[in-house]
Image (tube, rainbow, N blue to C red; front, side):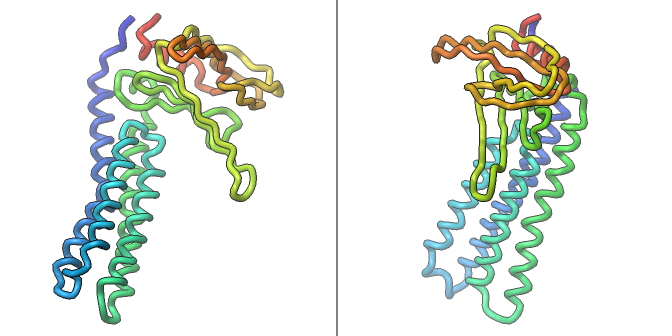
Length: 254
């Protein structure tokens, strides 16, 4: 069975993604504008290195956001990071390049606007996609995200050509326990929905163990001969049936 065609889901996702890209670009564009305005002044024309630094940083923020354009679950976080960083740098630039008593107020305004506006705009765009049933997005290029049970920041992700598990745990201050593992579609040999009794330790890729509560889960057998990897993932998600159907549809198998 081939991947279904879903023009409505694709167009809805494309519209939300455009809103994300526009909102995410506000911070970098504001930094570029600030550089142009500041460098236009006579007293700053000899200080081109800071201006070039700001331009380079704006480009990095754009590339950072663009690389995550197909991952709606990350849009709000990316916009928040990009906006806050752009706001801080913009405020520092205002304080460095302007004189007078008004510069502090202008710097605060730049910080607040660049930090909040992109996040607010992206939050609505992400919600419009994530609120749609996962099945409606199977035919789109969106990264499908399913929350792992009992993991506050754990996700099972179905992308265009691979599946991935991403877990972020805060063990204690300045120490994280992160887990990232991915398998391409050709390396997935079997997908099965199972029921977990709960309380037992299972492995969720590359011997990373978790102890989920009772409920449905995906059992994924990985046999990727290109990298000589054989593994079995037990992925505890409440939407296991929906995830299995989405994965089979994108893989193009019955």
